[in-house]
Amino acid sequence: DANKKSQYALQTLTTWLLDLEREGTIDNELATVISSIATACKQIGSLVNRAGISNLTGLAGETNVQGEDQKKLDVISNEVFSNCLRQCGRTGIIASEEEDQPVAVEETFSGEYVVVFDPLDGSSNIDAGISVGSIFGVYEPSPECRIEDMDDPEAMMQKCVLNVCQAGNELLCAGYTLYSSSTILVLTVGKGVYGFTLDPLIGEFVLSHPDIKIPEKGKIYSFNEGNYQSWSKEQQAYIDSLKDSSQWGGKPYSSRYIGSLVGDFHRTLLYGGIYGYPGDAKNPNGKLRLLYECAPMSMICEQAGGAGSTGFQRVLDIVPTKVHERQPLFVGSKWEVEYLESVLQNKPAP
Ligand code: P6P
Image 1 (cartoon, rainbow, N blue to C red):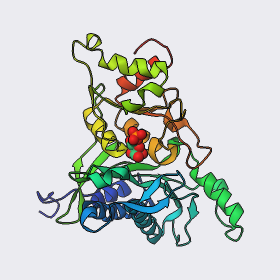
Image 2: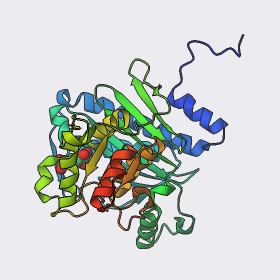
Image 3: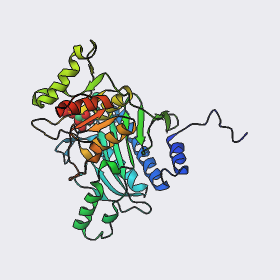
Image 4: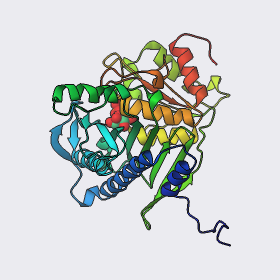
């Protein structure tokens, strides 16, 4: 019976995207952009897994716009991501953590999606073989900022920046790929969160985590407590509270922090609890970048039933004023994020 679903029918990222196209949730152009991102992640995963034996660990000898020393793999991953997005012909503008300014893509011929990404987040962990990841978000181009006057570089640059600085609420797609014990691509197109594990034997991302839902409440907090002294007293009170077993039936929260956002976030998404990078005395807006770290992670978390907050407002409501703008980030189970907001804002706990 040709219509009977074969027991061997693999649900892969490719077939999942085709199903979304069939139901009209996404169009072919967006499906093509997402496929090109998956191809970039496969290549980056392969480079990361062999970094130690192909002389790709260590510094590239340059610094990025963030003033951070770029690792060799930061530079290569950025080129891999940009090349895949250019070659797919559906990307109009790209903004990368590794590039000072967003760039208009000449190779576009059908569909002009805006893609923001951190090609290799947490790369300081590479040399120690600790999990790293790629983070991405996809927007529609802003209708009022169509890139036509390519001959005026200044005007075009301004339009590129305007296209990129959209609130997270406008994201059509947000996702990350975790390069760890396995390579897992997790994404949402606004109808739930789906995870795909790379099967290296066939080179396909196979559906492994259908419709991920984050636990309502967790038992893990993920913060860099080395910054405790420079946090606000409310922030300190929040962490002190999670460690006070008398408040939690005798069992305090556990602390887990690997210093790699994608790894810390993925564990929080699956096990529950909260990941936070607060602002502090030195950096009131914290360290993470709104456009390609805070907003995509917040969309994924909300789509999985959790929350994404700066402690004072919903991350997805914020319209960036600068491409590399930073914001404090608290993502995780709804209860822990709401409890954090209540403590930071001196309001009653949920
Ligand atoms: P800290 C990695 O550099 C990163 O951007 C995130 O991946 C990670 O969560 C955070 O910074 C770690 O920062 O200050 O705790 O080392």
